[in-house]
Image 1 (cartoon, rainbow, N blue to C red):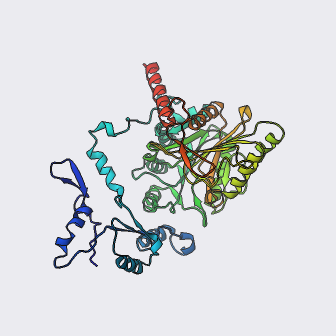
Image 2 (cartoon, rainbow, N blue to C red):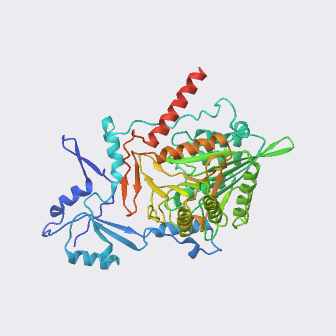
Image 3 (cartoon, one colour):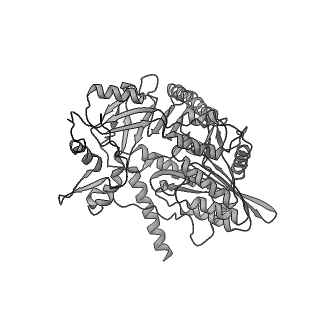
Length: 517
């Protein structure tokens, strides 16, 4: 048994084959010439092998309070590369005796051995993308996040938020207004403090730089950096050091809970009064993913929302969870139960002869309590529309049980990532945007925040977006009662919701540009 490591980056992974315009992978080239490498041996079989190791790091179970948590996490990440193998992938069939030997050496169950005909590592696709850039027919139409026309670029951001709530919809709207808000707060002599939760940030983060600038300008900056954000631990450790060096107060979350919320609170003096500017989002403070993921970000001056945000940050700074809230929904104590209460409200409406309605957009649905209550609502006659991109543990269309539930999954050019909760219809409709999916890990084992949408214009915008997603017949797949997904084919005019939202963003930006002239 001869083994060659192909993990080196000494030479490029993509190798051009003569003047054919074709490329091959370096590991395939090495594999082809294996007989020449192992001279004097007969090569009976050969394969590329990829070992996947367990990536779970149970920091809470191992952490000693006498240790520095950040350094503890750094050491733990180094150990990840030596964690137990959980999967073995082969590019070609190998002799059973060899497979048995590999399983024995790696302590992998034979059921965890897979034969793949596709390349075992697809990261080379980014290189192919650059090589083929001139072949425009192979690429999507160029799309760039557009200027958010609800803001006047020539005026300060904070006073505009004070006047009216604002909603950014990524990637269709640019993240720049939010970054400009942070920079403005960093320079504003009347801003007292900035508090923020960070889960995943860009490697070159303007958000973090703005927070550092604020601290260097004398602001009280509190940043919760979640060091347990899987595969972003190293990046977060480095940014936490940069934040501390700039003078920010950095905390690392709660024992037993990941802090997954997307929450920012700016406190400003205005004469003898104090003003609060709160931002709540569905996605990370990450400039890169804001161009690739669909997310929502609301900015408001509502005092009750600010009060709840203050309570969240005070609890985090005290290594505790929030005990009560007014307007925000905050997991682990005040999200699942509040959602169940709102489902019950729609059940009561339906039972009294009204039109109960629930509309939810999330990434995954696994929370059994919420699933059971959805089924109860369906039995009561509540119409339920669910847009669930990934894991879904609820089957719709079962007579007498879930026949009032429709479930679709939208998978398109951009990763569907926003979370929307809607309860009721018309003027009574309640709408929330949130960081939490309906998974038990989110509702009970993380700190998550959902914010009510109070502005009627924003409520109308989110309702419109949800309706268009439900009408998507280009990217949407509907879950049937047999548990299978089928492409939506309704015979109507093609509607790609993501492209539609981009078209609308371009139209608004173009109209604003004409008006500015």
